[in-house]
Length: 202
Length: 202
DNA sequence: CGGACATGTTTACACCGCTTACATGAGCCT
DNA sequence: AGGCTCATGTAAGCGGTGTAAACATGTCCG
Image 1 (cartoon, chains in turn purple, orange, blue, red):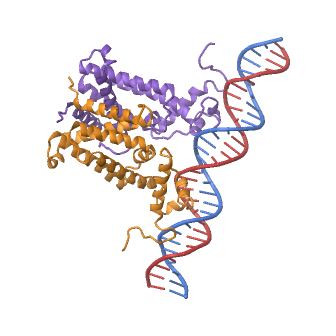
Image 2 (tube, protein in one colour; image 1 turned 45 degrees about the vertical axis):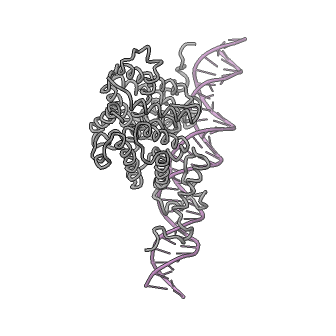
Image 3 (cartoon, rainbow over the protein chains, first blue to last red; image 1 turned 180 degrees about the vertical axis):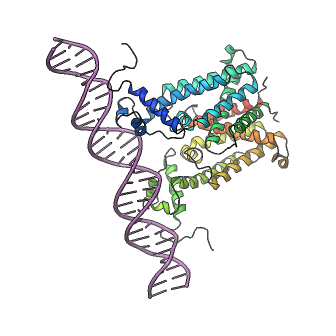
């Protein structure tokens, strides 16, 4: 063996070319609903060609989603690589929502659309997101990183924050929430998360 | 005028029949993706007939969604008509997620699927959900119902809780979270919401 | 009673996911 | 070097979709 993706056949790594084509289509119309045929056309290949490399449309979408997951984590890390405290956590939520709103098509590929949950890329991505959030939550609670792994409260909180950001993202995407500007949206998300975190219930 | 939907034409209130047909299809396969043609077939009518009453597929789905919104509110109210306190709020979140998981197709029609946000039925439903949650939140904070309307914190909290429940619902629907049983899911949702509400951040 | 007009049907177009049968050309083996 | 094999790509086609236009029908009103 030499390389994982044997370059130099007819097309030269069609799988990667298809994923690239899909991302290009999403870049041109961030709301586009990816059709296998459109992606194939974009890659300059016949409509049946993708089936040599992907079992079905969903398999291709999973590969596209994998790129999206990486981008999302990168974006979160860019916002704050080591979040500590409520403000930082709220920052992350805002970044999460911003990602979703900026790339709705990609976000939907990542999370909605039927979305085969058994795809290894997807489960890895999910746990990566959870890990990242759990780390931030643990630091914000003053729990050592080591202890966090077994801390049920950290786990529950991390899931809760993910769900909150995820829910806000979808509510914005589907027009159930709206904001005049991206700045206003950003503020709103922070406000909501801060309110959740700092409220005294009776 | 006599009745809003003039019964007695060719079919006799086709719009309602189409919505009923759609709900039947969803009842038979709760994951079904409603196609206009399938709904028309089910209603015993030609493919193009729905277009006399609905501008496009989305318009029909909006009508179906409206029923879903009512069902959801009914379900929440059944769980707890006047929620007070963190436990009650967590109950609501659990009921919300249960609704989504029990009727994924309907839930997706209500919230995902492109989902025209300008549909009056939808905006009404959204504000109804918000009102309901805001009421519960206000009571749980000891704010009088009247004051709640202008209480920014109540509003932010209500949105936050909705988003959390909504996010959990989608994460479960899309396989990003999973539970062995519906009881386990129920417990998990309560745990997560309780953790969010009762955590002391630094 | 007769026409107008809302309602429903037929037919058609363009697109989709996916399958099958066929063409091609790269790389290995003798 | 020459030939075989097999992964890769293509062409054609099936059944499905949303939507539009032209046509048929039966109800209600003047």
